[in-house]
Image (tube, rainbow, N blue to C red):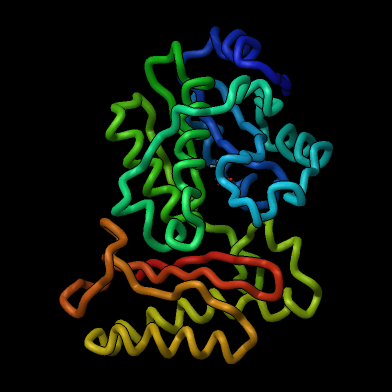
Length: 281
Ligand code: PAF
């Protein structure tokens, strides 16, 4: 695996190839990331991953400084998964000047759910992903990028960005990987204490239960969401949202929306750790 830090090095490494397959990450890799890498492997003629903890997508009070950086272990896992080029820019490589030009996503999608509780988050994500795409794919007529479905709204945002800017990039979704008890794999699971880890599956269970109850009584929508929030609070969580949305635009679902077109999404804090998850139904 070739490790490159700068844009010119990356472009040189990718120049002989036709169609890069790309998995962007912030490092601290787990089996969920490796599944994305394995999914991406046959989709292009060179497999590229990036590790970059992107300051622009963290709010001042969030965990940018403490975000786990596990460089040696990440390199070993990527190499074992067949990654050929690892782009790991320093902050000064990706942002040599303050990044004053930003990608401003559609507020209808960016200011709801995650964006309501993490204002500016999606501007930070879209800006860095656009920059990474430009680094990886410029000079190539086509490419493919794989993003995890656990970050449901992020995936949708990236798809919209690619479509609206007519980027010659196919975006594929990687299914959420779960621990045996059902907890969605996430780098932030590492923040959980042992007792918190034991009860962390409650978020995924709350979403499954919300989806099941919604299917049984779609007219009761708002009450079901309120019940789900109360039930999670009673277990010691501080939920930001638990809600049923239309998959197509993440707008609130109604009784007339058919099963198979919906998704239950949630974000909640357990102790100091904020987790997100979703369930399509
Ligand atoms: O999902 C992530 O890890 C990040 O948001 C991403 C896409 C790598 C951009 O920093």
